[in-house]
Length: 372
Image 1 (spheres, helix red, strand yellow):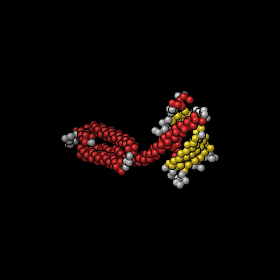
Image 2 (tube, one colour):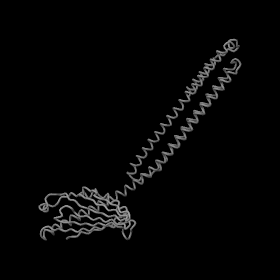
Image 3 (cartoon, one colour):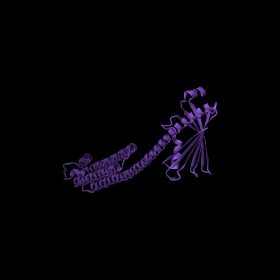
Image 4 (cartoon, rainbow, N blue to C red):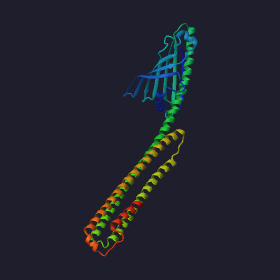
């Protein structure tokens, strides 16, 4: 019987190492391990212990002299039983070969435990393998055991290097994940702020629209009232002209306020977005890819918000247009009705207005909408 012993110190906490153990294969060094299958897994809650049984498949060529004994088979199977004890902070893995047991038996025990001198940041690795051959006479057995110890040592060295790469990769992924979470949180906060400002802007836009419609309605009612009360339209032209001028002025001012508010809101959104992007510090290429993806998402969300704002503004302006058209149509009908009902008085009136009242109103309406 020959024995192989090895130990190593990993610069990672025990919890991290034991968690990474389940991701050990495949790795770029241990290419001889081609498959790992879980056969059984049991958790013992009262002891806080997890027991796992796995089948490990290996594929590796054997020397020509050994092929005369066992044939040319290069695939072998290993049964492994591991026990994780979280109370004791130990991971013990025991394995035995299932292939070529008539030629040799390899019993391996691996232990992971916190390093006594630095238990919170380092993990101690111990490996012991007992290799026994029962084939042929002592000279043949010795040669088989020597070969097995050499091959086992080579694979063990590759396994430790491969596991170290898995540990480093896991740490890098953890850092990237943390950076991504940080960026995602900031992007989410930015989008939430944009949404809040958008809702506020839409509400102000709707309120402004209602104010404009209310102003138009009140002034129209005032026009109709004064027209109906005037003395045979003696002052109709001057009244309508002054009031329509007032409508034009108020509506223009309201729309200017509306456009100014839209510009202020969008400038605030753009400033917030650019400020966040300028303050974000990209540390490595992985962060750049993640940040680019997040920036893309922010840009898409912002474009959607701008499109929604434009659509909302267009709908409100269309509604205002339709409302004003209705107002002027009502004015037109009411004026025609008043002219017709008082045609005799108008015919006998000394007034000879140079421009008809209805034509003035239509001209003012056209001037208003062409100007906005």
